[in-house]
Length: 342
Ligand code: F6P
Image 1: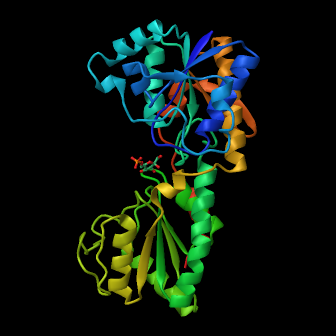
Image 2: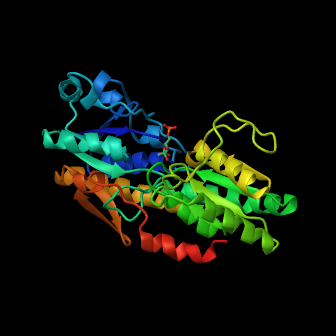
Image 3: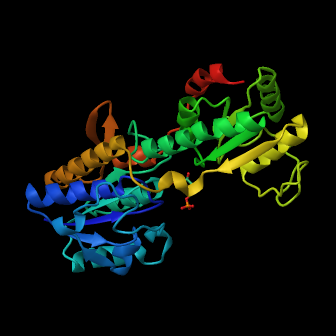
């Protein structure tokens, strides 16, 4: 069988480990040939291919990013896009596709599977917000990077008697904030799932100073104040300490805390650092096992499925289970962490 492989959406540590496992097992066990599609769905859409065999996947296991490149192209948003993909797959002699991606990439895979394209999905996102799987690869690496940053920021917070606000990724789900906040001993963790009360946050900051220690707050980029909770400083304004505020939630929160408590506060935005570089051993292990199972699913003709971690097993679930609804932090999980707040 001739198999196409693509990676879509934001890059994520472990993508190369999946590609390597798919290709190695595909060639060695199932006798597959491969076509690498470049830049996500843009590849099969525009016919952008590259060689993909044992030689191409040699040495890529510990490398971040993706040798195939990525994009957020969605063929369903382009007129004639789906027909074009079908034509190109036929022209390239591709019998089946392995699509590695998050909500958007696998959403496309789900719809294509419904239209008769032979596709299996591998769930990827540092945000860990795909349903159907206990964990996505990339998440562990992101949490480790954020935890190391929090560990390092404790000393600056304490030496300078400052509040430190660490903004981590997570537009819709606060998994990175919650896990790194617990692992790094943060004093407050704010998530998109639960709007925060700025007065309560400031009260926790002040009580933390009373106990001599300086507070570290971890805030997910999608966290929001409760409605009516006034965060008064606007992007570009100078705060009480003369800092120009840039506008992300971390920065806005730091300004607001300074204004309300009179304590100096700084924001650190980790941004894409969380997605870059070498994957942890756990992510390499998970990504590799997803890849091995994905190429077995292709060999079995088990299309329209997504690989998923359940406990310690890798299982196949319908693609729609991963792309239907996002997996969010529950109130119970958030409450568990709150014993450490303040
Ligand atoms: O991979 C998901 C994610 O990390 C989100 O948490 C974040 O909002 C987004 O990617 C940003 O990605 P980009 O800057 O590449 O659009």
